Image (cartoon, rainbow, N blue to C red; front, side):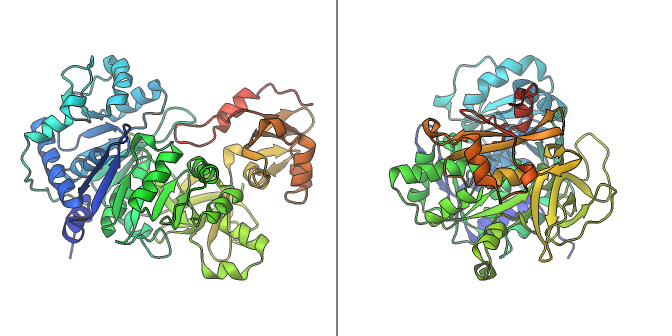
Length: 531
């Protein structure tokens, strides 16, 4: 049958097979909200009626500045299933970037967590397209605000009808909009369709990939404003799994450990810094998280030491790779039984790989001349991808056909496992040869005294560029010196890759999505004087 794939289909399915399964939200004040999928979808229908009553156009962009909680979940369904576009905005970006994104998307309505109201108030005069501002809270939680006619989410739902006839939408219709973080130039919008979102979820849920099941309890640490929490509001519902939403306390390792234990979370997703915080908390508090069996790390390179540390707590930390432009997942590295037949060194290299492409994603590597690179796990090249959930262009710009250039440098082995070796812009060219900063970082992170590490290329009078190692130590009073670190790295990386110097920081700069900002580090050490 010619059946359109869409967000409403996911909702209908979850309402049928998982009506009594819970969605749990943790708030900043430690309150826990819980309801079922059935109760959620009643409110989703009420919210769709609210959008109609506010005269939000049928194809309008509806902006959200919100954490992971039940109200944000409701927006992820009511907005696209009614034909509109759910535009999740990263509130951690600089104010001028948030303003640019809202203006570029021409958002008609903004749904705002109360803590982000001051940010929106400061930008109000610039946001000329926005007709309605809605605070995501109950009436008694509504703070004083300078926004004109600020509406209350719960007040709006309280008077709305709970029946709604969902329109039959073309599966190619836009359903979501997410902007890249804009590390160079202005942020760029990535528009997703109903079809791409459903296919992405089906591919993720294949058994050898993320492979969610109805018995899982899923807790995305990654925020919904970061490509829909890597698809989890849709993918968990697609299998009828319990969903646990950690709200604004996601950076509080103690609160997250308690939530994992209280709700018996079995699967979670987050960037390496969040897993490092949880690992350190577990070690310091001598607590355990026995229910959590598997977790995804992504968004930045994960050191082997962190995978091993989480393994000691009974958690298989698995690498996933993707991009905003891929909605977002492109590959996944789920532990396979044959890994156990490898020697320790080869197995360590294997678990660090970015994994095999999800079915539906095709990958290729090209050299500097545009020629194909061998899939031998050694030769590296520029990684290009294509597939049904790979972006064909940026919002407001021309579309393209063919392959999408990821900006990554990678290898592919004979089993189809991809390994990101660097970002093209982060490669270091020294004496006419390329040095991969990520491989140096992975090697040095195995040192027990290192908490975080980054390697950048710095101008050098003889070699054009040389690698500078920038580290954060676990114990600053017993920091390993440069000589010790070089001795530790010898034999692990080519000798000519060894960093010429080491600098110590109390913390590394991060982007709004939790990645180490090498752009900031390059600016900080732009005039570096080599010792």
